Length: 107
Image (cartoon, rainbow, N blue to C red; front, side):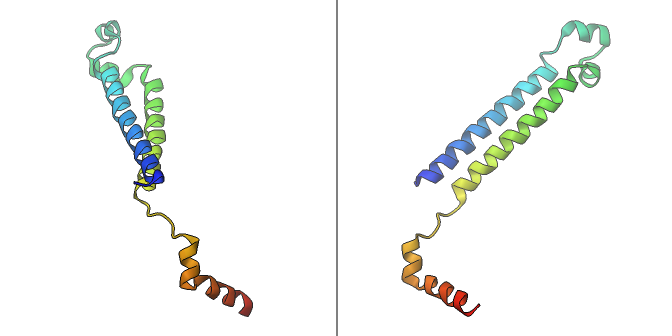
C-alpha cells in the first residue's frame, strides 16, 4: 500500500470513529444525561429536549462536528481511492511531451 493511501485510510478511520463517538455522546446528552431537576419542573424529557436552553448550544456544536469530521472523512476516502499519478518518465516514453510542444509551437 502506498504512503498516500495509508494516510488516507488513517484520516478516514479517525474521522469516522470520532463521528460515531461524538454522535453517541450527543445522543446520550439529549436522551439520558440532561438535568433531571429541569425535567421534573418542565415535564417529560421530550419537552425538555425541544425547549431546553442548552439545545441552542449543543445543536450548533453537533452540526459543526458533523461538518468538520465529515469533510475529513471525505478527504481521507478520496486520498484512499484516488489512483496515483503517472510518473513523468512514462509520459516522456509515450511521446506525450512532444505532442504538447508541437501544439505550443503552432499556436
